[in-house]
Image (cartoon, rainbow, N blue to C red):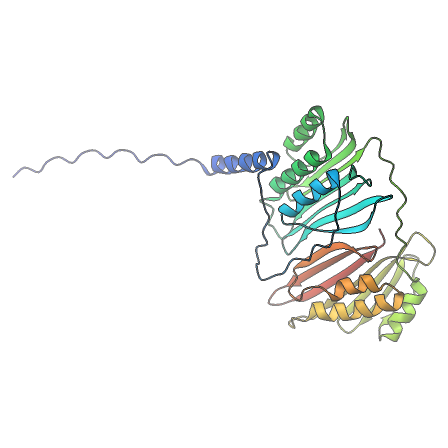
Length: 328
């Protein structure tokens, strides 16, 4: 019996190269951002809680930008919002892998006068940093009403590869774009006719001398104050304060807790920071830290007229929390 000859097999279809697939994905992301397609940035650890959004109502361009940023998963808060003085607002996303912010100023009618964007991907998670920055820039230039020629200038600078730091000359105003690494990008824009009102927010209450006295009362051991500030320690706590623009004033207050294997760094830091701020006469800022979700992954925001920041390290071997207050 003769065996029928086997038919030749068709060659397997070639799969597209990995670089081609990545390129297509990047193009899709950028186009989606510029066309206004919803693109949200979801925390990788769903068990961690985001910060509450405390920003009030806004008008015109400020309202449009706020809603666009909220749609991207960012939470917003106000340094001040006043019909006569205008608005200063920040929208943020902070967690273990990302530190993303958009801060802007607007007039009472909502016209945007100044914008700052910063995107940083942490811990080696830089794959989406470039795309996320481009999406945020798309939101900003759309809300601010840049004309076609300015959009071309911005898009040309976005397309540039490699580290760079560039000045932007626009009909809308002036700006700078800085991209020192793959995972870090910043953009700052200022409208040509922007003349903001003086901030109505006073600096952080108290003095370095008063802070040293408070810290000592709370059981901290402080080194002799230096020309730059104050440093104190207590058990697992470290307290640093930097001088402000006025003599003996406090420009920055930073308190950290390192509890090692014990998962209580955040409440330990919050209890100490709250006590210090209340004695300094900053109860609203103290309340911000007291209201932090126990499972927050980090936070930024304005509270009680201060810029605040919370950084968390949460691993099997280390638990740390850092609480920062800065006079804007």
